[in-house]
Length: 272
Image (cartoon, rainbow, N blue to C red; front, side, top):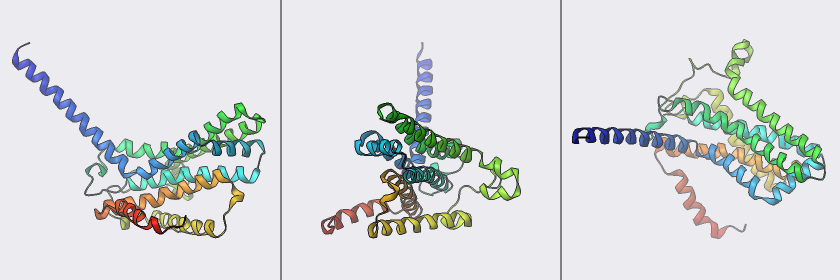
């Protein structure tokens, strides 16, 4: 192999390496935009695996067939799944000037499908964990039923997030479920560019987060069960965290860093 051939091979290798690095960088930038939608299922999975107390509670809920807590857990799992999906897809519609990878032309398939799979992951993770708990349960049949119900929620959520545009085309009254790809706006510049319905839903969720926090402080709602409370809280954290990420990216201000500094400053004055 002569010098020219070696140089060409080296240049080709460097070109492929640079292209790979750029792609990895873009993927990392996209994931950073939706980091709270990624954090929520990650925290949930860690808690499901590492917390013996939570697994004992989940097993007890299934074994004792606590209908109220089972219904609350199923609803909370569906709620968190849809919130994770909704916040992620909304954040990925923005084009932040400081983040070139936020442009709609960059990794469009990742931006389209990742929020959907994150949504399915939430009830699936809980369902699989409950399914594994059934093996060592005193009443495995009841626990298997709970696991099946959670996995059914995952299927329903998956059908909705993947097929809602098809449903929207079936009947005019279902058009509210989804905007078609041809008319949906991407590369949005600010909060005001979002559809009115999207803005209303996000504001409503932020208000619900504050209201439920105050309600829990004044009068804890223990009747719905610890698993449902955890799942519900994680879903609302995805909304609040994504709102902070939007403000930081849009105004180019390190909002999360400022909040962390505030937490450190205020902590010595906090009784709990």
